[in-house]
Length: 123
Image 1 (tube, rainbow, N blue to C red):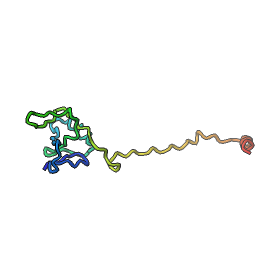
Image 2: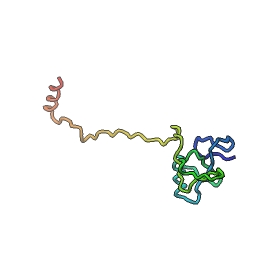
Image 3: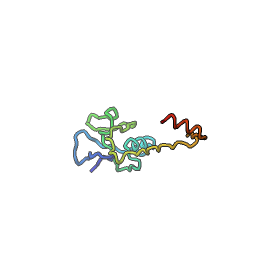
């Protein structure tokens, strides 16, 4: 039984979905392989020779069908159709802390006359 390696995808040869084919990872092309894995949003995933990716993750322009109805994936194919990851798996953005005002920027009246003037304004 062959299943799709994409996160959350339940396509498998057992389910016999019409039109779904399974394709090997480009293990010999490291650049293309890294694009596939990055697009899958699985940073720790290391595909092996037995792993497959389902055809529903590719655009139709990347397929070649023979007269005998065999489906082949073209060499430059890049998977781009993936469901969104659940929130708990999405990268977390760290909220930025508010910076405290520097004491140098705060004007403090230095004489009692300036303090009296400030008080008169507010009273």
